[in-house]
Image 1 (cartoon, rainbow, N blue to C red):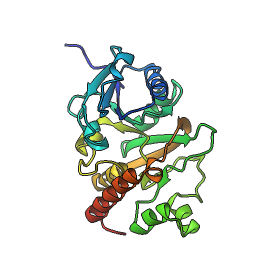
Image 2: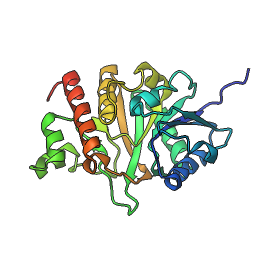
Image 3: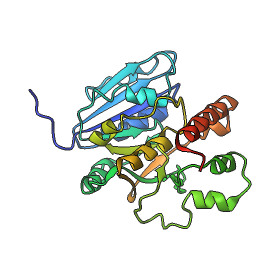
Image 4: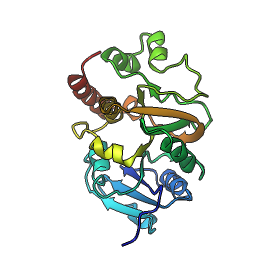
Length: 253
């Protein structure tokens, strides 16, 4: 039996009608890591149009054939992975080969931390404010229908020095590098959410586990960040539905 290498990293990306050129860059970023690795591409698209692009021993392509949602799709491989670390990765993120090893080195030193996220920037290098307070009903309404700039700034830790590491309550989940054992103990994502709020929910579950999350700006990734729910009425209703489920579970404050 082959012995599992130390610091083996796995990752999962959920696909739904992605831009193939953007996705190729994300896959290349992950595969460029010098560690032993395995990438799972879980395809919720109605047509299998991606498999032929990703013929690699380090990739397992899973065609679902229908949109089962973000959390359910990531959870499909939860019982298959036996890595030390698992990366929940969006299909529109790019990063250098040293990012994952350096994040693992930092995460490995901190038994109290379940997942780590680097600095996240837009393609023009502007900072994305992925660190948040736990959502409240007022915060969610304010993000969709802005009425208080002060509330938004407080929710996004805007008074914090984002060149320094800290433990926010919630990190928006485009790049979440977990200790696999913690992700399994959390039982992955709550599958009641079809889209949106899964990352906020799992951060709440980490709190209940007595663990923390870490923002680590010494490493950086580039995220396209499409802001889908602000552009599509259907996605807006998806977001609203997930928010209702979240607040019924965790409370409105």
